[in-house]
Length: 89
Image 1 (cartoon, rainbow, N blue to C red):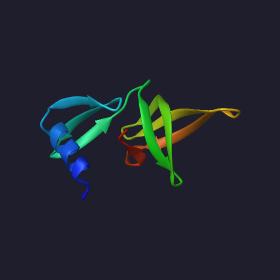
Image 2: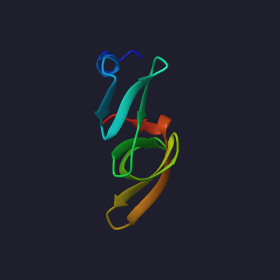
Image 3: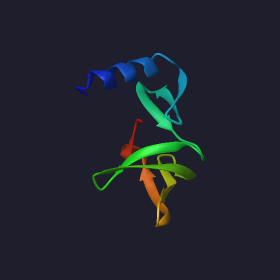
């Protein structure tokens, strides 16, 4: 990771045993920062090169979420979003 702001963010979160960030809960597990999300949390993720925002509707698996995104004139769109697609706000 070459972004100094991202390194600073990760270092700050790592110093806390559990911390809520960007709607998710981040904790240090086996030396790695792991963020999990709950129903109602707002997330931002990358889908086909686009950054999208939505709300977690359901936790499908340990690292996959059913997310709803509202698009004007199109209504609600639903996605299965994996943890590796999610980016910080």
